[in-house]
Length: 50
Image: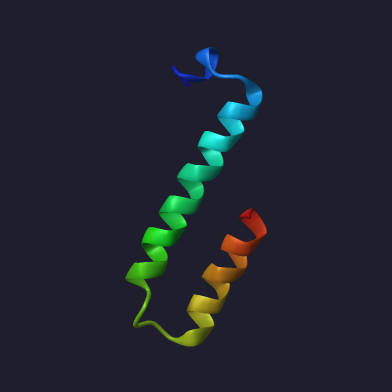
C-alpha cells in the first residue's frame, strides 16, 4: 500500500502480477513430487493469471 501512491496504475498492476507469478513458480517447485492432478490445478491457476 505504501508504494502504490508512487506508482502508476499500470506499474502497480505489473508489480502485483510479478509477485503473484513468482509465488506461483516457487510453489510449483515445491509441488514437483506431488500427484499430477494437484500440479494440473496449480498450472491452471498460473495460466489464468498470465
